[in-house]
Length: 132
Ligand SMILES: [Zn+2]
Image (cartoon, rainbow, N blue to C red):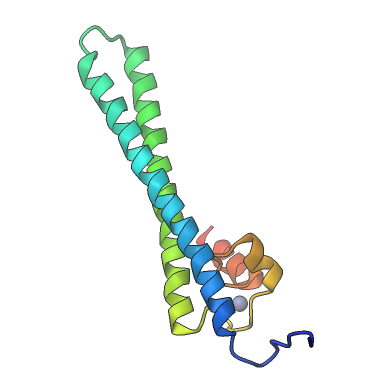
């Protein structure tokens, strides 16, 4: 069997299916994580509602911090899930694996580590610098 040459050719169907499965699996994992985090934050809120009566300031400060942590966790999970959703959409469009900024192919090594990456390292860094 010949070494597979992907340069300049469309991504093979089997490979697309494989990527889709991997992305979908991560997406489902994040959905489960989100459900779990929501439940945990609801428990946190119930506890809070249940015993605020005798609280001193320090206690309610801790609870606020806990709630903030829970909320930022929820946001992080949703953000990550959105990235996978976006990657899946790009896979369907046939633009998956190409940078959104400069359209160069994203190195396979990068996609293996960050399957939801939709831009090359250079464009990502440029964007982050601009946001900072
Ligand atoms: Zn780029």
